[in-house]
Length: 406
Length: 231
Image (cartoon, rainbow over all chains, first blue to last red; front, side):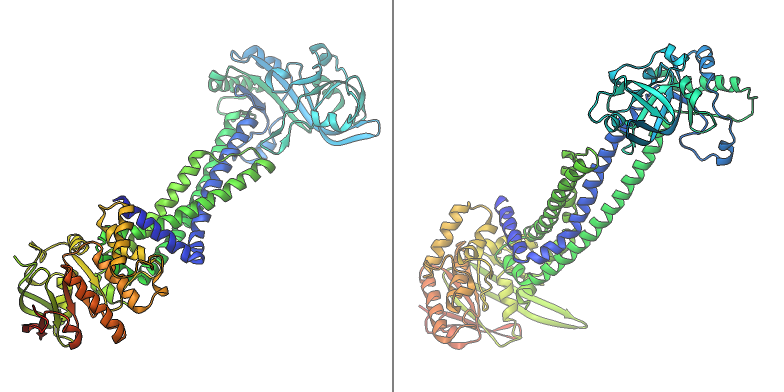
């Protein structure tokens, strides 16, 4: 049995080598299909990693009381007309909620920063309570965070995000330097460790943090972000959310039957939305893959029919010399599988190079061994299916007719 | 029992409403080491008989024993095995694989034999090529050989599996008369070495090389006689 296999492999290789252009053109569909499937899964795994990293910014056990829901399809005007989040709710929440472990208040808006002749524009000024580090991933690299009493007294102290520190203090140590946020003077007390971007786009390193009372003193008016972050035990986050909803409803004086006029956001809603997007991306990738493999497969079937026709006489000779049906069939099947497997390999090579590119310029992404293996198996399977009908046709030829064929 | 034993062989084709009796009750026996010519005008059933003897086709009815085995009702794959082991074909148009060397062409029946190791195959093919006087042409491709040399390669290919019969269909049809004579001399030698040869031809002078001529007409045996070369 083995000798037929090697013979068939040898025939297939010399046939494909003898028709290089034809082989390349025929294999292209498979190349595209394999690029689509392997690159798509590499991208998804990369985006997954990116997403999971970003989710660290939003603690799993954090509930965010805000005016606007992060996702959803509620009427914009209804949302717009909701009352602002009252920042003094924080204390009440901590008192009334069983689950709440830490309750931090946050406000935010953007402003320009100046240090001597250097300035940076549109920096996110984040006013928070002193317990903010407990509900977030901010980490002080140099200096210190502000204290509770600094917050209560509205001290003009500031912590700089790592990017901000770099642009305002390229050469100096920023600690204890005086900078301006708008027209207010602040003393730099700390620099935050680098955090990266949220979902690959929103840099967490271009913010500055000040005490929320100081923020309240300086920035008046309704603009900007306001939220109350409630940290609860991760394992009870669903129960805690219901409880929190009840607490806020009571604080807001809502009657039974009235709709919530606030939102409780959590990491989970990001997760659900992301899952949806991921399914959509994956589905599109699968459709592209299936289509190009189908078209590629049809092309291969077609060229194999041509090949069988061209080699009718050769088939006759081989049959006269004792080749059985399955040996002839094997000969053409191996040829079809070789085209698609080679196409698969080339496709894999291209998407491996592409994934290096993605890695370098976009985000960390690597092609898994499983994906590579699956791509090759898939392309070989396409060859098997595409080659089956032509190979059977060749195998069934009547040797007498085939020998007479001109 | 004879090497080939054919009894009441019929091959009937249905062409629309008419019935064509390509072979109309043929009985013939061919012994080991015989040298037989099959002759007849076109349409006489000559090719049909050759296809049946070559196990490329099965009869409509009748018995056909090859080396004691009844091949009349065999499946395609069984016929392929019989062709591989019992029959060596020599065609008018040589039918060599154009992209393969002489050695690979001759090796082919051994590959489909399936039971012979690669290095043995090479040795056997080389020996067969030496027997037909082409020991120095093993690595040549068909287009690098003359017509006579190509037919010798084809004969080497027919010999290599030690078949029970060598079946030659107009083996000199594509050769000039001088080369044709050389090929016929080769067949004479092969017979002298113990091979059984069946020759299909319409040329009297070629048929004269055989010891026996079977003449067909309208699907029936018209004459079955010894030639002047009969021993």
